[in-house]
Image 1 (cartoon, rainbow, N blue to C red):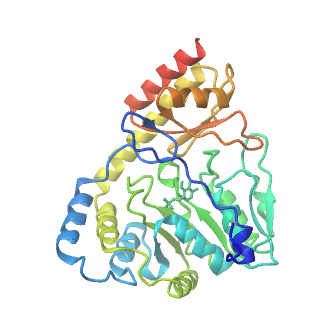
Image 2 (cartoon, helix red, strand yellow):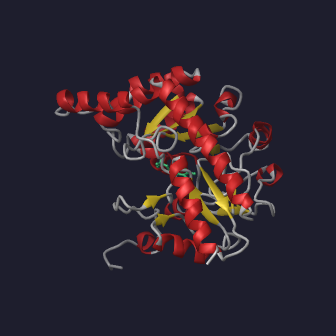
Length: 353
Ligand SMILES: Cc1ncc(COP(=O)(O)O)c(C=O)c1O
């Protein structure tokens, strides 16, 4: 704490990301990264760009990537915004669409960056309790004062909300922006992108960090009505014109072109998730039905925190949130089948002790 900080900075409580340990011996299943490397075509595109273009500024409007994503989803480039990871897109979204004095709604168990942004922008918050089984009751998100945000699938619960429920939330917040954070949607049923042309108050945020194996490249996007996208660009261009570097643009374009690699790795993770979930259930864990690249799991025969600590000692990094309602849950990212099998063996040797 320093007296040079302004009063707002003094009372901030920054987000704490999951641990990033570089030890290759550790099986890292704590930040929902993809266990597969990016498509080889992405790596070639990045290499080519690095060799020939790094002396030049990147495009401030990121048109080529916006067009590529537009083609993928059947949108115009004016309906697509690009940011430095979806965290940046979310931060700009909070600033563009939400305002102090009008409470925004988000779930009480959700992505822990939302309360941090709310504090940074001095927003009022109406935290909505999830149901006992962690599902979202759509009605409780109706008629917000200042807007709505939640992930779908939600994190860390992993549960997916059907598009009909999202439509009901959009209809009952027609004067406010509803942000659906789809960081994990490629492992789930359907994206809300299909609703964009019908609801001018819908902003869908996605990332290349999870399903496209590019957490290290930092690319995220928002999709919505051109007026929402223009608002985001106004804020971005009042802050930093070049948030996306040349390597990120080149790699991201290729990631959207190589649909075969994307489909293959995405399906493999979904299959491994279902295998892992069944195996945990055999071991008497409670595991809500995940539509993400992680599961939330509660062990019956050992305290979650104890299992977390012992797994860490055994070389497996997963996530434990010491938070109300989650005290006896662990969040486990889905790695390769081989990694998940090793984790199951480690769980067995700890619980059989
Ligand atoms: C729900 C949710 N939204 C957004 C993000 C941020 O992703 P990124 O900034 O890597 O795009 C995460 C990352 O874990 C997340 O869980």
